[in-house]
Amino acid sequence: MKKKVLVTGGTGFIGSHTAVELIQSGYDVAIIDNLYNSEKSVLDGIKEITGTMPLFEEFDLCDQIQLHNFLKSHHVDAIIHFAAYKAVGESVKKPLDYYRNNLLSLINLLGAMDKYDVPSLVFSSSCTVYGQPDKLPVTEDCPVKPAISPYGNTKQIGEEIIEQTMKAKDGLKAVSLRYFNPIGAHPSALIGELPRGVPENLVPFITQTAIGLRDELKVFGSDYNTPDGSCIRDYLHVVDLAKAHVVAVRRLLEGLNKKNYEVFNLGTGNGVSVFEAIKSFEKVSGVKLRYNVVGRREGDIEKIWADPSLANSELGWKTESTLDQAMETAWRWEKRIRNK
Ligand code: UD1
Image 1 (cartoon, helix red, strand yellow):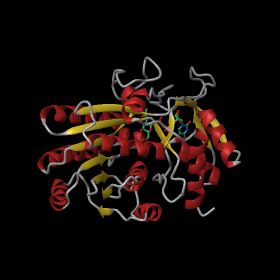
Image 2 (cartoon, protein in one colour):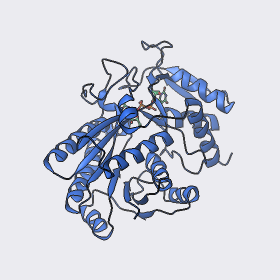
Image 3 (cartoon, protein in one colour):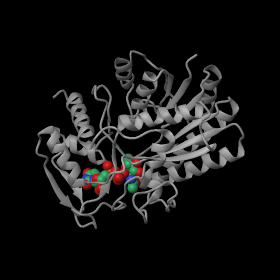
Image 4 (cartoon, helix red, strand yellow):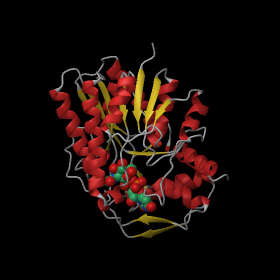
């Protein structure tokens, strides 16, 4: 019997890539998404890649009754929880929306897991919980710093809620995955990132500029204490990231977890500057990018990259794609959705 994994937010960027990897690894996938930040047509992309249309229900996880009805009528073995608001800037303007949506949905989910006997949860967390770390690369035991944005705070509080629930409830187990910067798209170019409005993140802004949707990329600061003056991040291919979710869910389903709450960094271990990211894009696309250096963006961290050795040794997972490969898939996806 195939195990069934519920993917909340499964039509979103990371969720859709994870749904594909799960199906290709022999799992049944069910998706709940309210389509707030995604489109139903993503399901067609998943079907085209895998040959399987996942079960899909459109509703909001803040609606506890709908969630309970869903779990009453569908047996699931594990949950991967992506569904959340994720725009840092928007979260500063609408903090209550972020706290209500990101935390209430998680609380509902944890309550429903307990009630309907779904023991395993994988939670989508972020390296944002580290703030600007004192020591690089960042390991999982680096202290969590006060969050700069309400979005970041929902990830910190989310992790705490899960940790305390796992302590309180025998039989439940969870893994939080702290992502560094996911970029790229499926190599088929059938699914990818679909930012709403003007993208806040670097790579969609680069590809939208290159395709002609934006005039120029603004590089936020070149006076940081880094070799070329721009900020440093750890960019990982979304397909590599998706594969880590399959491994994490299998670890829980097969009882290979060492504690009933575990945390893993997911990154490449390499720091890449904004200028290096631009160079990589220009190399793989052959497009000269229009960009201009402007002032620093409020709230930006100077430099951060992962120490992924715990995920390497415990999960047997490591990134396979290079920055160039990730950029190339991001570009292929942008061209496909703009019919170019
Ligand atoms: C942010 C969040 C992270 C969240 C991620 C995805 C923080 C500290 N980080 O990551 O938690 O998971 O978004 O939503 O809150 N840049 C430019 N010009 C642009 C856009 C970005 O120069 O137009 C630069 C930024 O200054 C940064 C780098 O590119 O140095 C990456 O930015 P971005 O893609 O927005 O990701 P983070 O800010 O690292």
